[in-house]
Length: 466
Image (tube, rainbow, N blue to C red; front, side, top):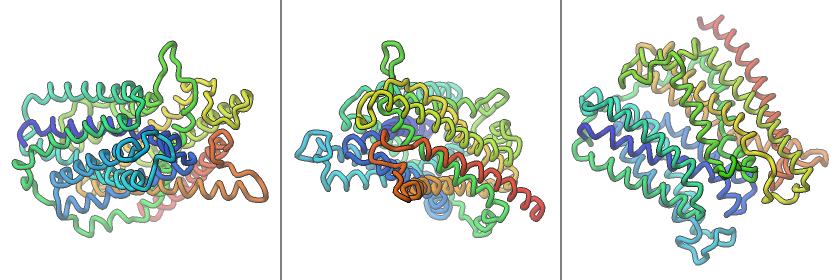
């Protein structure tokens, strides 16, 4: 691929950022255009997010035993491009006879294209997450990525910021949904085509590292059970970020002076917090060379001195996130009730959207602390076997994906239980008539129980598995 390989990979990542900002408002698309209830729309998105995470450990096995990283990136980037293209084509004006973004214009063809496209995007997300970083490390090891590295890295970092700001600020001002999905789709197709230009020089260049069964068995230890339990809960809490949090922000006052702030800015805040924690004070990973190995991992994890401490911080962040979200939703419902808007779910709510920043900040803390906790755990458990560490990392992501799916189950269970005995269920067709704040309190209570159980099980494991 030559020294331009890092540029080709960067193009894929930039396109992925635009797609992420486009998908951030998918909750609005499904409720406004498809006219789904907010819980139904959230369920679709949480299952999709869960699948994209659950696929990662399986794709890693496929990479090590059959494909290799470059072939996986060919498959995943192609799937990504086709998937977002199909989602764009599923919008009513493209192939339908109806040019309006309304429920009656969404037919069988649109639904087939949408679900097929989302499935392919899940494949693309999983494949990219598994293979992008190892592929770049392979480039460094073989000298393919050498050259004006510092300048390229600085330019790449600046361009990532530009793309993120574009996705958060410019893209939301494009009103037609076809263009909102279509522009990221075009960028993704171009990025994929650019990446595939290196196929001839690189397709079979890399060795396959077969995973032996002892590696997989070593990951299934009793001492990992407490951590995996917390990963499920953290995944469940993360699942509400792109769904119920977006629903809360939907009709809030977005004015900042004369500027009408797009809701994607909340995602930018979340990602910004994660980036800040990635390079917190004393963290030298920002300047460490790629593939620096154990030293880089050590620098990345300074905020987490032990995996146990990291889990406690992550779960505590999740609990605080749920408590904050519950209080903000209670405040929002109070404004809705006082203004007589309970039966008008589309009416503007005179409450600033910036009240929700706190829960997005805590969600960003949760995501990054959890990632660093997994890195610290891998460093402690698999210091002599980097391959086992990769499997543990992707297994943790897969378990978090199960948490996303459990979010769908938890909404169903809480809705059924709250509606017993003639009481009104906490989940109705619209957000204003629901009690999402009480669901958040249930999650906070569940997190507190899990934190106690984790502490007890950790003590048990230390006594029996020192």
